[in-house]
Image (cartoon, rainbow, N blue to C red):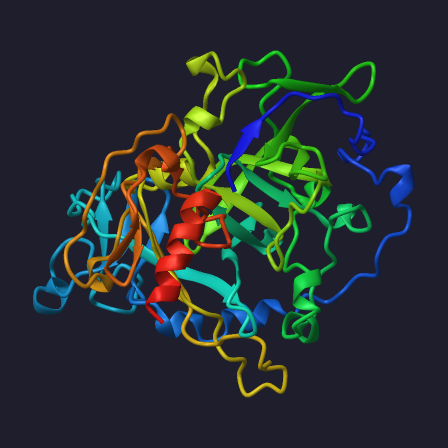
Amino acid sequence: MAAFVVALSLWALLEVVSGGGGNFLAPAANSSKVLPERHVDAVETLRLQASAHLVEGACSRAFGSEYRVVRDDACTRHQDLPGCRADGVNMACRYCGRSRSGQGATYPACPSTVVNLPLYHLARNSSWQGMGVFMEAKIGEPAEDAQYVTLLLDSGSSVLGVIGRATEGLPGALPQCSVGEFHSYFGRSRCAIGAYDLNESKSRELWPLPGSRYCSLVANVSEDLQICMVQMCYAGGCDPELGSGFTAIAVRDTLSLGPYSSTVPVNAIINMTGPFQEPPSSGIMCLSTKRLNCGNSADLESCYPGAMEELLTSQGFENRLGFCLGRPPVPNGSDAASSYIQYGKPGILSLGGSDLRFLNGSMLYTNITGDGFFSLALKGVGVNGVLASDNATAFRATIVDTGNQYGLTLPSSELVKLSEVADSRD
């Protein structure tokens, strides 16, 4: 889902208010019909059995950017090593990272390994059509008040945007899933899991502020208050007939992925155009470089890291990710299991790089050619070892886009050639 940022008029914006309790938004006049509250028990469907399929040990924990806890079997042989039994129970769990002040001990540097989290990729048995790659996350502090969301992972754009329940009832917004709906062929395509409500967060703050180089769109809330907005338009633009997009209030809040947390830019979506929201996700986590995240695209100094990059760097990870696609786990003996969903092991999102245990062979690399996008020079396509086209001119710049649910999108002329070769191999 390749995207670009534009500064347009706020003709479709929800009414923004500055309530005395710190509220920033209220439903617009045409959204007075609010859908009934639904219990989000579908969350458990995603969590069931997921941890059993991860390869990380129980020691993998984060404590900010200063140190982590990892498994070190040396502690079982030499129990007097600094940092062993870091969790107070397991001798093999050991502190790593920088020195802890006041302890008088220097802990070993954390290993340059990756940390794995569950990743889900839904597909329909009937058509084999993908429904996006998405993951779990939480936004807000303290932990007991953090809001659960599911995020489509999109390497073709640059921001973290999340939809709140206050937008339900507006065109394009989805109600919350129940378990029954999540396991229904038709229901799952019409509901979402999780939401981020700006008014319910105790840790959010407005960012950037109007007048900042990072802010490109300002809205007047009252005579005394202005806020910075973000408007994203995806392929086809913000015309609902041709493309999709959203308008959001720009804030910073705490993002948590597994045990790792950091304060990052968040876009609290209050309006959408076109088919933006992909069920069952309640938002989008964009992964492209900060070159696409600018207050002014002509001013490199106005560009800032996106949410995923900030979280990775704040925790001492390399700014790299690895994907190993999977399926949602089978519900725990539940009658809710559906013949329309391909169940199996969840996939893996590797923070900090690729987990070599999932590779059959060695990792290969190619140069990135785009400015902001993960673009590469596609040399050719084929089927079963037969080259269908090597027309590099037709391919132009090819974007690696995890938000593209169809897998591979080609120019129509090259798609015809590929289809002809595939038909000839039947």
